[in-house]
Every structure is written in C-alpha cells, then in structure tokens.
Length: 207
Image (cartoon, rainbow, N blue to C red):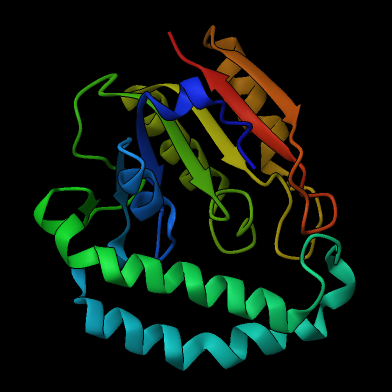
C-alpha cells in the first residue's frame, strides 16, 4: 500500500499509528529498522489482546454491512479478512513485549513526536490520517503531517479516502499548503486496493 521498494525497507522507518499490526514484527524478523508509535502501546499485551477480542465481532460485522465498499479479489470474503487480521495481530502480540524492551514500540501519538529532526528516512501512516476526516479536524491533520515532515525525509500516507470510501476533503488543503512551503508533494497510485478508491498515497519529500 506504500509502494515500498526493497531498498526502502533497508532505511529507517517510522510507523505512525501502528496499532496492533504485524508490520514491525515482520520487518524486525527480516532484519529491518522500524519504530512504531501508538497510544495503545501504553497497555500490556494482555490488555491489548482483550481489546482486540472485544472489538473483533463489531469490526467484522461492520465490514459485512459495508461489504459493497470493498473489492473482494485478493481477499475473497469477510471471514478470510478476519483470519488475516487476527493472524497479523497475533504476530504483533507475540512480538510486543520484546519490541517494547528494544524500543521498537513507543507510547506516543501524533501530532507531537519525541524524535529529533530528520531522525527517520521514511514515515508512514496507514488507515489513520484522512480515513477519519469526520472525527479529526483539518487542523489536527495539518499539525500531524507537519510533525511527520519534521522527523522524516519521505512521508507516505494511505489511503486518501474516509471510512465511507469518499475522498477526504483535507487532502487538497494539505497538499496546497505543503507545496507553498516548498515541499515536493504528489498523489501517487499504488497497487494495493481493498477499500474502493483507496489506491492512492499522499507522498511528501521534505527539505
């Protein structure tokens, strides 16, 4: 979903709003350098697992109700999606305790990050910014993305649609403001598309 190349994966990556995903665990297994930030990392693995189990049925049922908003090609059914997501979250849970010790899972959140300028080569945000445009203001998006630009040289945000598969109205404002500041900003197509219309990233190359 981010068009990451093998060379990209060898760089220092910051995963913003990583949640209980398997990305950090898998990259670490492959010897890559990834740090993930999320407020959920303040909890223990047991508490996170409880939350996952408590919300699983609601998430799956909501997906089933809104099945027409997704492309069921690589993933053939809601049930298969559930299995894939639970497997990824198990990978996360198995890695979380050791990852916390190693400083790979950090309890913090946008729009304020505890890192020095240009600490990372790439900063990613998946299914957070723009997706929840109805809940998070334009000002929050502006501050969060400016902070990502501060700590990384290459910023990629996916997707550019909201939870109802409607293009976020914030994208054009953010793009315009960043370009006026002299950043290289582009909307790029990616090969991944599960949510209909969710096949683009906002990519920012910082100074």
